Length: 206
Image: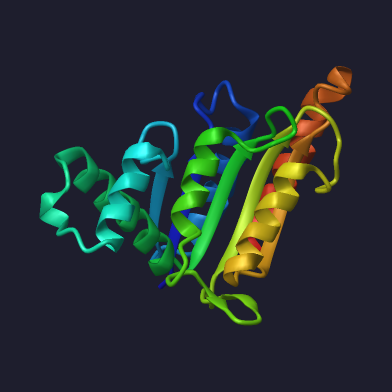
């Protein structure tokens, strides 16, 4: 049995979003082949996701200086505890599926906020005299992304995710793209069907 963490990083519904059509297709094909797997869906736009802001930075600074956790404000305690919970959720997962759209050539800001929770020195990587070293092992990632144009995986968003996961030690990384539908609207349905078929096949091999 594997623990599967799904990061849903799109605020619309499956009916409105090509990204979420891709995610639904992936899960529909993955789940029957892995009925014992524990699948957790984290919605980056709806679930509790603390951002790295002044309050959280102040709380971490206070804790490093020796302040007792109970002395933090209730808001700071919640933010620190939730941030740690999301880090642990990632550490416990065997497989991670990330679904997002390419927005302005980058990932959505809420997905970046989640990425911050897995970039934790001492937990997912460590600093050494020769440079940072990854601490995360035995995981694999599948990335689903919708793009209006055609980038073939060379866009900033996919390359960022691929490299950020590799930084913490997750190099088993694959991706599927639903792309070109806005570039070639006359063939949008055909392109969508082809892309979803590729996603379905990838799910069976993940």
